[in-house]
Image (cartoon, rainbow, N blue to C red):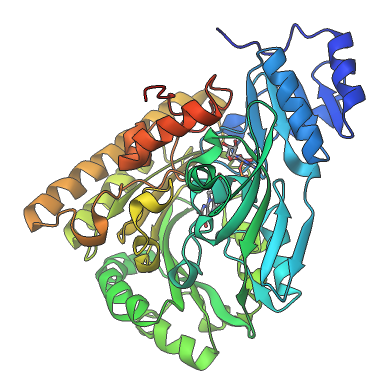
Length: 492
Ligand SMILES: Cc1cc2nc3c(=O)[nH]c(=O)nc-3n(C[C@H](O)[C@H](O)[C@H](O)COP(=O)(O)OP(=O)(O)OC[C@H]3O[C@@H](n4cnc5c(N)ncnc54)[C@H](O)[C@@H]3O)c2cc1C
């Protein structure tokens, strides 16, 4: 049955919901505009949608009551936490359950755990942990919501040591499509626990996560090194060396991302580096880059608290302001990467930009040189997350600001990444790189860096059949249909 967008809900029905909640119900056209508009804003303005109803629950019971209301009225529903997706599943025209009022974090320093409500931003958990001399695994920026990054996987500068964000969840509380709230852990509802670690929002709303924390007795050495465009070839020539001879030999302590960023029509290479230890040690790991003569002085690398390395306010200053319509797509390239394939990918990227020089002047390409061995050491079927490979994550952001270009730019981004994938596949075939060892069954797709258009099997790989069975058990009527929703399998 087609879902309703909630526009036909009567004032009595909405007031009825209000009386049952501690939190707020904001309604398009009825609530003040200055209250409504900010609630539909998204990091990626491509996905700003005028939802008819936005519920801001304050408690787990509020979440449960709202879910029952959604089921009763067969409403289209989206879940929103940090509102930082590329593909827009937290937006919708129906009812949004916006978790921003549920942001309490409690740290138990003795047990080394943090209990965080499902609407927290990554930085809030990071700061709470750091205040007790501990560290939590989150992504590269503190503004992403823990809801999206954890249920989708979550890759971090700490992943080489501690795995995915999802690998650091020890328990969760999940509000299901029938309004029940279940504990999910290795010992309770373990199938649900399996599903929420990589299966996204397919099974319900996580109202609370319990994360493992790690000791953090020191500051870290981190910063950005930029290079002039004439050094692009030399930078490409260093990628295998940096990954194989430095990253892989650092015991997981050295994490580095390459960024090829458009600046005034020119592609500038750079690196965001992180060393989990003292400056003297860290400097040895960035030596090949220092030898290349960075544009930014090495003083841009500095000792700092871990939380400062994920500070989005600071990092976002590197971006061109005012460009906020983004199509991000990605693939993985096995190590050692083929320089030829990489150069070609960069040239094709520049060719795409050259077609729309003004519109795409703030775009960028990100290559992750970090060590995924720890992530890939966990069997692919241990959690729903299927991308347990050790390749280089190759992500491209097409960024523009003119709404009329939306369709064209999305087609350009998709066309581009398909070409790169084709070239990588062909090169792998020629080099005899096969799905062996820990790569067996692992997908090449990082589903949190996509435009939402990928095939389900590319996202969940061999875990798809189990996902479908779980869907039948926990969401048989497809209430949660926004982020790679799988179809339920009711067979025995
Ligand atoms: C600038 C930027 C940097 C990024 N860096 C990284 C990085 O370093 N590492 C990385 O792995 N990813 C990174 N990402 C990707 C990011 O992790 C995902 O986009 C993630 O989905 C964002 O989560 P959110 O809660 O902010 O998003 P939202 O848009 O609020 O939600 C995203 C999805 O998660 C679901 N969801 C949200 N909360 C819950 C919940 N409590 N329970 C169940 N489902 C929920 C929603 O239904 C939706 O499908 C980055 C994204 C951006 C924009």
